[in-house]
Length: 191
Ligand code: FE2
Image (cartoon, rainbow, N blue to C red; front, side, top):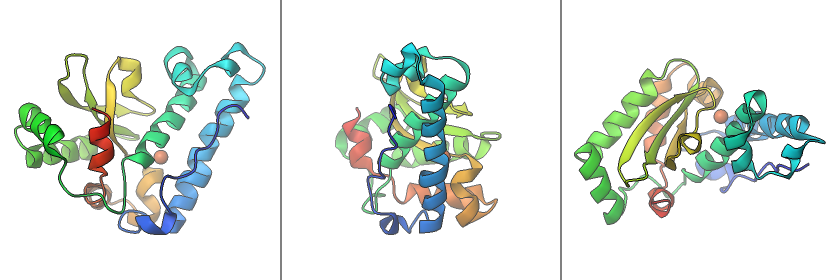
């Protein structure tokens, strides 16, 4: 298998503020794993087999690109959450958030609104443009900033598979819980 299913960067039981073990069993071990398996099936015995995951996201098309993006997005998503997360970001990122969104609270408000109003499945991102400006992206399906030439800083998976086990249809409760575990140290390290 060329593309690996990366381990979760935290112990399942440590993430209980956001996800139950059962939810992570399904989300990581089944959904995320299925994208990895499908991608490996699609690239098998082709020139794409030699490409990195990021290159596949950018250069492949159709299902190959969609599955590669889902693998990339999930790998990134798991890094955005931590049991020690939730505190406000450090000075450098706080300054950027103030500059582009007015305040940390307004950023949280706007990010939450983007997560709540994304119709159907998709991802909400905080991303950085080439001129260092920050923006919130509401990307449906397997959307990812790296195909838009933007640098990802933070993402939230708003596919129903992410919250149905723990929150049923209550996306708002899920988004609220996510805000309490954002690993701002990781997000800042991406600046
Ligand atoms: Fe997901």
